[in-house]
Image (cartoon, rainbow, N blue to C red; front, side, top):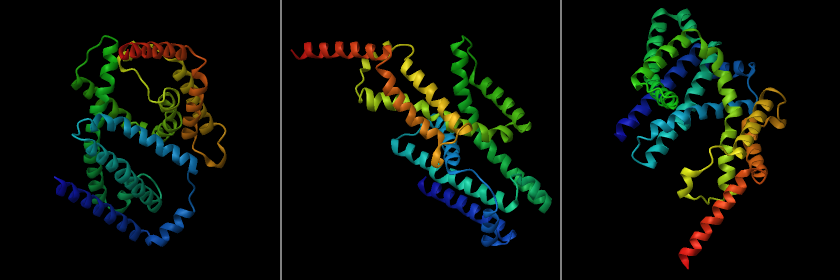
Length: 294
């Protein structure tokens, strides 16, 4: 199995290197590519980091549902490394080099100008590749939407959810929905979603310092206002600094918003009912532990 996986990685690398060599040779070589790239504009460092964070969040959400079938923690780490360290950067590099060399992101149009057979082969390769990718996406979408319908008293079979997700995704794709809105979606995700982790980090490391009472898991309050308020403030800050007033020194808005959310959580915790609830809970737990020891 390891030998087969290694061969697949080597084959992927050879295909990418071969494709890049052909593109560079067609457009005057590496020197001409560098000169052309220097004339193009692009994202600032902060915005670029925000977009990367957004793409990693989208991948991590799906990765959890796929990696849960792995048999060991090592296999999970290997799968994550294959996605985020090998595949994602490789695809970005290949896409960037192709776009700069060709002069546009629509490779089909470029291939039609070169050769009809080349365009057919390219479209066939992309279509089959999308099929394998969308198999995972359909599965994950069924996992996400099923519990939502169930919470409203509607039990829908997974195969039905997969069918409707496929039909809706195909329809939106044919209308260029993803091409038009995907970049904005990833940017918003990278700016506003990192603060979701802020309350978790702050509560575990700074407020409770890793002390939790597992027996009370089912008796937690339905809503903890500290987490809600700090996330809303942090997410709003992320969007404000991304689309309103840029941060100095090109700082990424999403990561700055995450840090702000952690700070706000610690600041607000003592001023909400959450602190009183936890204090009473830990006091009772300490009393019970003392009675057991005595």
